[in-house]
Length: 477
Image (cartoon, rainbow, N blue to C red; front, side):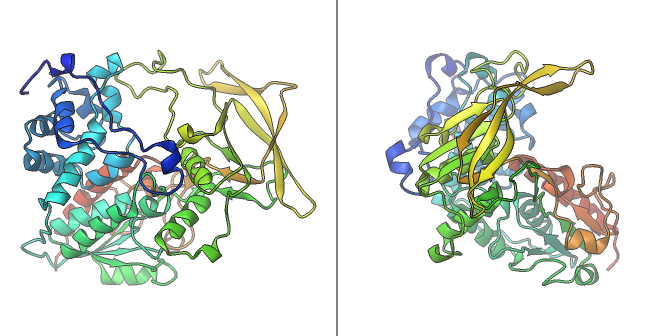
């Protein structure tokens, strides 16, 4: 590094967010950017550790100290080349990754880790802005054809990798536009969809074919894929939402979080007209059940829609602030996370279980009864939940959003048609070569692993692409 002691004199500096009063009035990205000189200074804080735990923690194995060094020196092209050698889509992860690398940074022991995520997105955005990234179609084609079903982060990664290896790739997407979870699950205020469009255009210029509004098993027959392609990759995500089985669940006004978020994203893009909106938080008391990132996204969306109030509940206890001895460095810390959406105004409650919903004479939800729970370790070492008697309370709720995660891929369509084997969690089962129970059919991302992070979906996509390439080399034209 140019200055191996820079971390002693230069403090961590984040770009921060747009002012609350400004950002809640639109769905534009909330995060701001630093100027190039400040960004280079932040990169100079890298200690060039003998054992780079940031590299260890990153699912993609990003060579973080190396591109930090080039960024610090202003060598943007070299930084971009190293970054994209392991990460197909830094413009996505640089915006929405929980930055596992930063939590394992040695400087995080002083609560002052490097701004790895912000540096990452700065490098790739500079590359696009300055024209460093240009379409580079493969010089030679292998003659092998691959169908990728699903255009989320895993599917896009598989398509990108296999196309660069010279195979002809067609991506099928059931929705009107490509992007999967990135487009329909993540709010625009975290990931502007023009970022996805830009990447899709680049992949198209490099030879990838995208077929939208094409649901496998409906618009496209499964046997067509098997006949026309040498290999098929299923990257259909894990979209079957976890539900609540409590009294009053049948009332109107209770929705899975992704149904709510996807509709707003379609409104923002013009894919859905305002007159077609079916779920709105305007003037309503919103209850978000689930304390994770998806729940936080619901909070920010409801605030922008003009909710009268927003309450978010979590069944687990409130995590400690700053440091948690139960998850010591370099593990990812289980500590209190306050997102930009939380800072915009909502009530947060922990150790709360939903007992029942109540509604009006028209069948619309009006309130939820919550009960405090306590947690303790059982004899088997597992955490056990017990209700605190007499702790019931009623909260107003005329819009309830269930942000409880997902349990497995939706079985209808390709899984059902191919009669694929699933594991004990309901995910698509694969062998050691990542092939499903159907010959030449592979699975990538959440469809095979269960709900996970975007960065892990990209990693899985790279691995599956490598496996498919090896499989195709065994097939004679």
